[in-house]
Image 1 (spheres, helix red, strand yellow):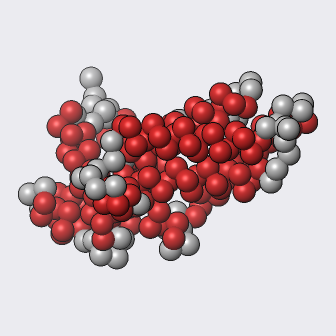
Image 2: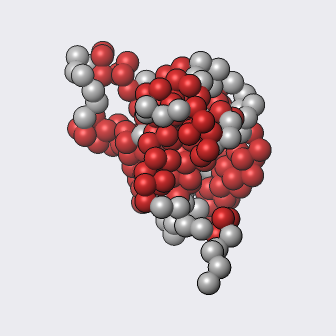
Length: 211
């Protein structure tokens, strides 16, 4: 029996572990130093790999950087359907904010890479954002519009409402170290994220309630 073409071969477990390690270290360095401040050599050195070994998995720093962003975006989008697929608004908002805060808590480095890219104008990832995030945003806004048409919520500028939700939850990734410093603790804990969730969802829901 002839061997499978290389494109169809399933990577070995050792190869997958090495790729995961490379992605994790690349994410950590891109989060701290930005795209321009990181080199393939700096990533390879921490992992005790040769530059050539790293290039075997990703042929360029640009491709490795996009692979990190793909990983961050994939995890984010997999959990961001709470509004578009929901039947009623209050539970949808509570679930959406909880998921977004959990992502900020569990993957701060990935959030930092994403934020750096956005703040720079998304020069290396704008195509993906337009193709994947914009349709998701439009679907969420349409769901809010539908609930407003049903008389379940007050009509607002729902696009800016989504921006408000994104920014308030993203802050707990981008500014988490600053928040914990002001609170006199080494890091934010579960109680802090629970408090943030209660406050954000409460404010958002009260702004939508019909009085």
